[in-house]
Image (cartoon, rainbow, N blue to C red; front, side, top):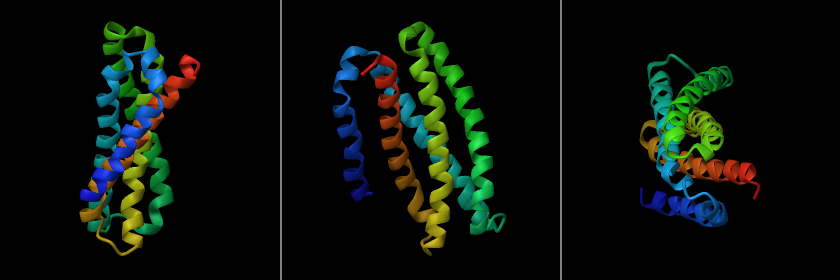
Length: 160
């Protein structure tokens, strides 16, 4: 956990790198925790299900490609559903960034879920117990990815 504190400093560095984007649309800040948490939560949930399936013998390491396709479809549908919900809030709070939020929510849920699905397989392959190693790492990687995705989408749409 101590090492992950330093890993999470990258989130702050990514945010600082997009300072001009934030300055142009301060409403982006309001949705930042929601989007980052959604990515980390999707990753943690996916990891929990995958670790359980590995532990119960329901899946094997060799099944990861098949499961990747399934995880993509499920996370896409979940991301779109969550994007619909966040767009309702944005319609009232910040209608100018609805498109940014819809795209970002969809992408962060997909990326977080896929990270959460893949890391337990990697740990299992490396003979490391995925139950003890994955959750904090998955959350940290998903959080950093979420920040990067959010501000990259915002910068492209806002023309930076």
